[in-house]
Amino acid sequence: MPGRACGHYAGGRCLYGERLNPGYHVSWRCRVLKQWEKEYDDFVHRAEAFGLEDAAAKPMLEKHFQKVLKQAIACPRFEPEASAGMPPCLHLLDELCLKELPVCHGVCRFFKPADKPSEEP
Image (cartoon, rainbow, N blue to C red; front, side, top):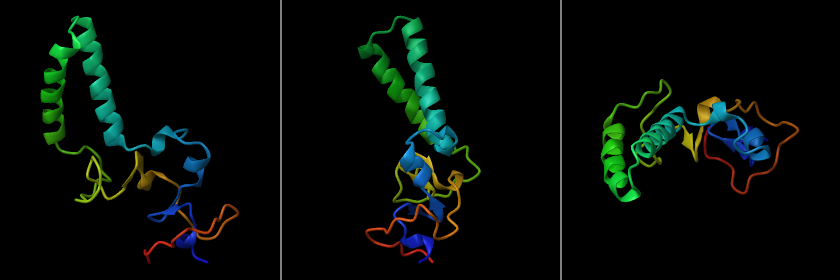
């Protein structure tokens, strides 16, 4: 059976390592999401340093992130996909970048039949 019939297969990549230890491989996470999280954390730290209350900080955060979301996506692997989440990237799966996961070479010792095989070639 080809790898696309495996329950760990997604977009030509193997999800086994992520399913075994979710979040362990930080390098597999979407770099854009990591940058947005850093932007959020930096904003929160600045708001706390200035002693802003939540009610005052919330509109400022929303305005800041409107600017962030309008900026170009800084990722060389970014491929637009309208039906994807945020960021709207073809390679985004939950919080993972499929291009960062190991390539699926077909049947391996971790092969697990998928509920429904992928339609990919």
